[in-house]
Length: 369
Image (cartoon, rainbow, N blue to C red; front, side):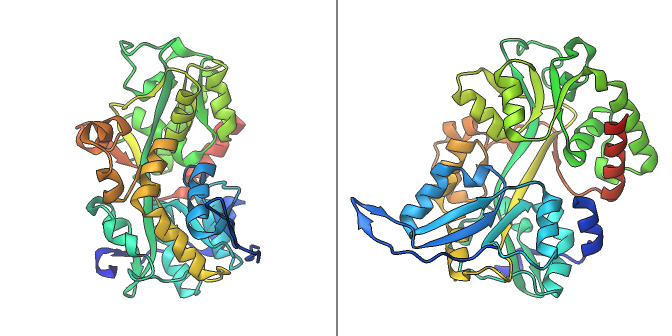
């Protein structure tokens, strides 16, 4: 398995990463079977994004294993890695954007902060789709993280107000054109918001932007600031903006789209002609995980076909497991978006900027304007 991964040599220092961002223990209890239900005998604390730890998904794992999963509040990739590099991460499993944790891998491994694993401990890893094998993170022949799910971010829009015939429907311009002034929202996040703005402005390689390029992006964002009804920072806040029809379009996530659709709203996502942002989330186990055996059980569960299919159905995001994808019919694969990379539209990986510090400075300047 290690041979399929990519060895990462770049690093981000703990001091720098912590500057950018600002215990868990196993609980003993008696396990029993009553009416076919397994009661949790231990607790696994995890730090993961919202999509993979929805209650119905965790309940499935608890019934199978007798292990209760307790999610901690997720903030951002840099916050997650900051917690890991602090040396005090006692979570059983952590996950975040694959691209953003790659540069920190060497430091985390050198400082003995990550626990290696192999196929024997995570047998479902053999079902990983070929597309994501380069996202397995390895160093010195050891495997330290595994891609779990993937998806894409775009403009979510309400068909009640914005028809599919709108000329800008497949452009990031839905968020910037003056015709939608006061009815759009973007995210309070340098990484995603600067990335999509740069694509709209014609930057083909946003990750390589220098200070002068970022100045242009900030200038443009400031000029459009009056168009934004809100700059959202929390999941519930963003969903509420659309649910109340306060905004008609916003930068959003697949789970938000799924949530709003379940509420009966005609909310869909576009495919920006300038480039759809796609991403992969990877999971890893801190060296100080209180119960490594439970951690490996959960990691293996995250790669199961049953979990992957339910993840897609409940959260709208896509599993990296080929077995999970194959559990859907070709028609359903298309409905869920598993064919997004095959549709021919431009795709841009939501990767790590060459100068993330400059991106954060630029975003702070926009917010202060």
